[in-house]
Amino acid sequence: MLNKKPVKLLAAPALLWMGVLFVLPMLMIALMSFLKRGTYGQVVYEFTLNNYVRIWDPLYGQIFADTLVVAILTTVLSIVCGYPLAYYISRLEKSSQQIWLLLVMIPFWINFLVRSYAWVIILRSQGVVNTILQSLGIITEPLPLLYNSGSVLLGMVYTLLPFMVLPIYVSLEQMDRRKLEAAYDLGATPWRAFWHVTLPMTKTGVVTGSILVFVSSIGMFVVPDVMGGAKSALIGNVIQNQFLSARDWPFGSALSIVLMLLSMLLILLYFRAVKAGEAKEGAA
Amino acid sequence: MKTIIHLDSIEKSFHGTVVVPSFSLSIEEGEFLTLLGPSGCGKTTLLRMIAGFEEPTSGDIFLDEKPLTHVPPYQRDMNMVFQQYALFPHMTVEQNILFGLKMKKVSAAEQKQRLEEVLQYVQLTELRKRTPKQLSGGQQQRVAIARAIINNPRVLLLDEPLGALDYQLRKSLQLELKNLQKNLGITFIYVTHDQEEAMAMSDRIAVMNKGRIEQIASPAEIYNHPQTLFVATFIGENNIFRDNGTNTAVRPEKIKLYQPEADKDKHKKLGTIADAVFLGNLRKVFIRLDGQDMTVMAHQYAGDGLDWKVGDRVAIGWAQTDEVILTC
Figure 1: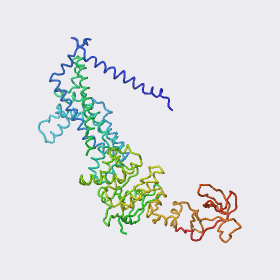
Figure 2: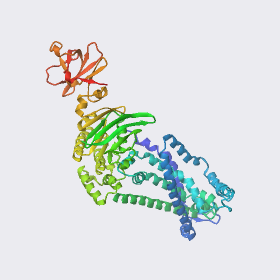
Figure 3: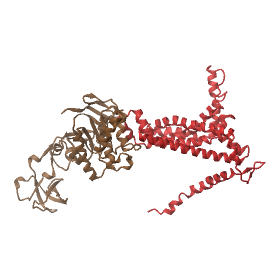
Figure 4: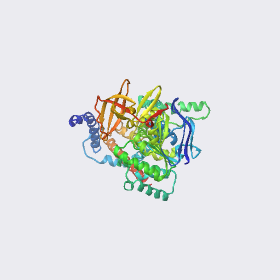
């Protein structure tokens, strides 16, 4: 029998790390959201609900709504692009799989900011794409490829795709291929076998990937900042501004708390929907 | 008897290595045929070719005289019971069993009726709403069988279906499977490495070794008249006497032991008792032959009045009719 006490201690470094660097700041943010901003941007220790009242301004409502739409679209597009890629990789020989997985992860080796600016160079009016299309005579005026919600979406999916591909790949790898053979044996065409067996059996990967992508995209501010321009501000940018430019930490904190609660609510709804889907499948 | 499946000089290689050398085989309608052999002998590959999961490198497979070689598994009128069952974990017992009918778009009314019949048949009615994880090994095995037979296949392929179960359960399920096959009249092609299982259930056994079918015959024929050295030694226990390149096999239960002085006309060889092992219903006696580097095993049943001890001199003999000359 393993002694329980030393084993428990193994979790201590991680718990300490999380406690000091995650839980404490979270509590501070929660506390700060009920405080007042001083004239010079300092925090005044006086209780108020004003920060939360301000959020009801339609301006912020619109930004929250935009952010959610972008985050949901990013998640859906990541599934649509990520699942087939993960499926393709999982069907390769082991040695090719390693290479493809490496290719999926290589973008992480380059600084995130640098990669976003690389997209600016590709997409701007005098950028790579427009220059080539113009020199080929396909277009006369440069296309507005940058600084719109399309370019933000492109940047988001580009940045977050690995978070979708990797969990789906893992669940495809863990799936017992004989289950698929059993489906064929019972008369399922490859497409129906995928729909009734592979997809439900790799649902965990899709759910994990979706949450990773959704949560990352909902708070994302670098991509909309660099590729979206001033018009496409998302809630991440607003929060960043409150802390850095506007120096209104209490309001920034209140926005963060609302954003967090909203993501949690949406993830909860997502889980519900997945469960309901299962129940429906069960009744069929 | 009508041929249901015919394999015409099929061969299978993987990456240029031949795993199943070319051979032909006809399987009769309603027959219980077992592919028996040690692991890696190609029996599963052969079964998978019939099911359509592997394509033979050359040769053709016919079902009811129609070529089947390039027909995908989902269009073949046969079903398989997989090793470890391969049940769908995200579906209930009922959904697992109905999967095939659903794929074939059978009407809801007929689905329901056949489901009830099959559930009753395999005694799973109570467990219909459970998922595979909530079932014991034997129950999962019954789901796997129900999932296959509900489709009324012409042929049922079984890949070591009892391999994952404990000994007692295996014994009782052997009988159940055999009865099922008789009652349904479906052709069974059964893969196993367990010779006892093969003996107990099959109409014919194909003994396989290194991808080759060494002999295909009834269990009694395989046991009493093995054709090759492999079959003679793989099935049951045997004594092989080598003489000028001819191998002669005599089963231990056919070897008779004599006192060196008595019944001299029945003696074939002389030796010394090397060991005697008590096994309850019989004793296994090992005899070291004189002048030969060979030990013969004989079965001695209780009550023959002779009590052999290690070191005793002994003569052995057997009837001419109990000798089997092995062709290769």
